[in-house]
Image (tube, rainbow, N blue to C red; front, side, top):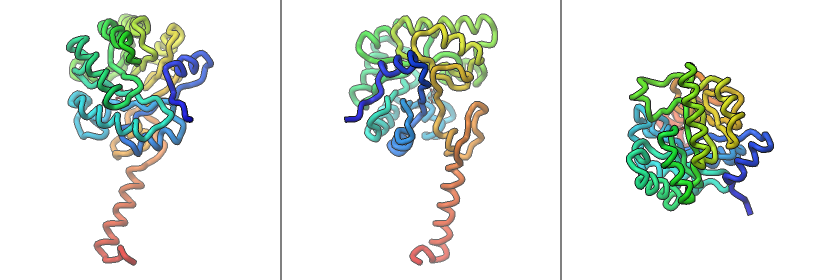
Length: 261
Ligand code: KIV
């Protein structure tokens, strides 16, 4: 029987120095590709707001959208850990709402864990979720759900004060019981320091090579949309180009009455 990657496996990977591979996946097809390729964890990121649902940022993503996409990813995967990203305002209002919404991700969508964008301010919420039996992945540094407050996306942790605050955020998440933490958009030296201090694994994006694992957005990695990829992204394939060329061929064949030839 296939065994799904667990939080204990994450701890083991860190202890053994084995790099953790996480990727976003938003539907059954993508989950199948990513799992077949050997990814350890599939993050149903709220980046689906931009990459799949056509919103300007992640803020409009709803619980219903997250549950629906997470369930699709879960149905199509057997081995990878499936992590649901708690949408903006689904966990900030109260601990009760956070518990209810994180619980729905596990009960209704079959997620193995949830992720939330948080610092020390939300450590009591993380502690309650973990006490309730919900594995939590934290997320510090650049927080896309704070894009309006921050006035855009930028590198965080460049000043000594900001770096200290991010370090403290990561530590308080670990103390609250988080099993892992995403480090996004911070200098490589800071992510190296945090990865050394923490006993739980760090997963980096735009945070340099020293994290215990990496996460990438599938739409960037495969150039699904044709949009200019962010600077930190590595583009391994041009699926937008391949798909557009194939559909163009279909259009031409139908128009020229050659489809049945
Ligand atoms: O939503 C997302 O894709 C994320 C990753 C960038 C970590 O949170």
